Length: 108
Length: 244
Image (tube, rainbow over all chains, first blue to last red; front, side):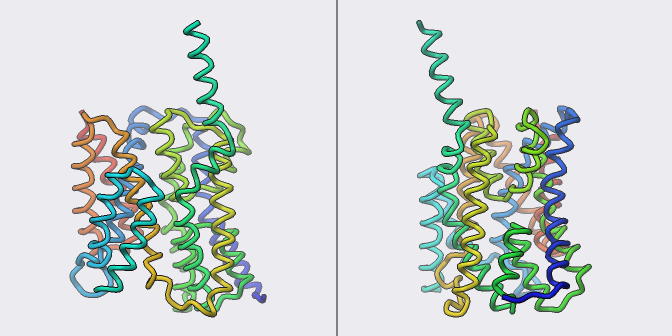
């Protein structure tokens, strides 16, 4: 249970730069009405950001010069996507994804 | 008669949508994600030489999985404090977009409550909230608090438990737990798409196609967390331009 004052200040610094982007829009949007085109742009953000996060995890950028698919992740991705489409359930998809990934790592 | 029944129905729906307990319930499906990633973080943190106190501070104050993992990685390469802070800022800048997306739905609440909603925003609570907004058309403060506080509590408990477990479990990836987060993003994406009308779905599928190409291209030039940010901004703009 120890730490240094350097570490505490470093953590506080990091906390501040992760807090501000989360909070500023909530303060700012209260006093400003966003133009329609911005609202329209924002309506595309959920699908864009979620697909970007999924794709980020399916790409292997570390192993070589050429960016390739992360095969274990991709092999798990396909059945997990089908399960998500069929069940439309967050919990079933998460549990199934973890089990499939464990099986894939065991076999590959 | 009919109007009274409708009124009652509306009351019933809005009160269940504006309940703290409903927020807690809607958080439950994401908990496996928080627990597995939190445990993994605790294990990685203690393997990186952080004390339990430091892991707890990181978890309580930063409250962002990817940023916390990168913090450990940078600490191990003994990066200077300035580099760590700048990297963490960029990694988490996507929350600016998420916060900007959710904020217009909460303008009727006080400044203090809005600060609270923003402070506890994460990828997962964002996903659950935008899906709820798509399905019910409106978001409520108490519901949001229930969702946020449940997620925050489980995240802290899982990270600290992981820090203690760190001595015994060396490799959480072996059990597929790292995929919990990705599976959650996949499910949230499917839920988003299924609540979009049939007429717009092809437009969105095309955008995801652009996203794949742009993410691949950007992966050669920038770190992947920067790629996520840039690709989202680019593809959302393409979305507006190509929308009919």
